[in-house]
Length: 260
Length: 256
Image 1 (cartoon, one colour):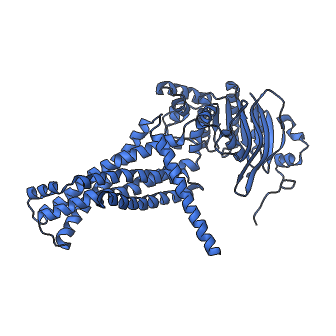
Image 2: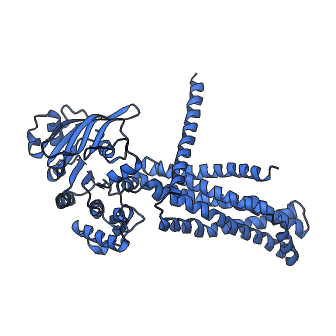
């Protein structure tokens, strides 16, 4: 499942992950060329989150291979894992801002902790990142709990881009937002990815968002990638599962488990 | 067979949990002695654990010291300054000071640690730390362990002084003892081993309270209910371990 383009920034090979008897990933293969944006779509429980968490290193897969810039990341020592993680920036579904820190310190967290930047410089860099996502410097001292959902997502995006990472991950970036705010966040994501020249991997079940954010789309179903191609081809994929998913039909090859 | 199998499963899960806690403690302690350190976080936790626990520990100690004097006089029928001062000093410095301070801190701080870290777990804040190249053990666990181990002995020192003061006040104003004689008896009753054992206990209790708070918070799951469960588990397990370790340390210091 390799899309045409440059050398793979992220390469996933035959990835398996099970929780007890529940096999979530059953041999995922995926290549993401440098500088491209890929959205992995799929229903709830199909393995999207487990896939992205495995790539980031939050979960240990049972078998397979994950290459970042050609380097195998499974089984890395903690020091090497930290080195690889420095290439990443991530926007979490619920923003995952630290409650105990003001907004600016959340945004500057990576600069302060992993890059050892001085507080004054880090604050300036955080304000620039906040400005990039349309957040006013007036909210810098506020607690994350005082922000609306949309503002929290923006602050989370500012934190993800503040360290100028090579690879950005977006976990359901529009979930919980109204359609207009969702569109604003998508635009900010596209703008940020372009300005950084980063490679982006998004997981979402929001098709409108996937179309806006991604160059390519991959669909995951029952722990495997069942289709992978450019956004422009998704409406003519020739894949019944993709057609059912993007049109939101209840009848089709994808069987939903509905308890009665 | 089903009964035996369930006993087997239960035994295995208990040993598995002990292994997990031991591994968690080893990783946490290893990060206490390896840089980078987070002095701001350690200081913040010291203030939270030490300074803000002073009222509850102080109140517990003063009433316990007072009751100890009352029981010694009316309950046990001891009459002299020397005897009552001795019971109060030994009771407070060896056992009641450290144990009651430890239990109070387990309820106040152990619960707070489990709730805070548990909430961070279920809202993906701990995952966010990892993606920001920050080790959660180093950032969340180590500062709490260091602060609790350092602050509990200080709290117990304060509890000792206030507890003895409670006994003094009752003895002077209720029983009409001579203050100078009572204070001299108190000073004479102080023994290095008993006093030191209380401080050692305090450091161990601090470690156990912080370990249980961070461990249960770190491994909480399932949203608000999971965080609530983690909080309960942290307080209950810290209290039981605290009483168990109290017995062991007492046996080590005073068995001979």
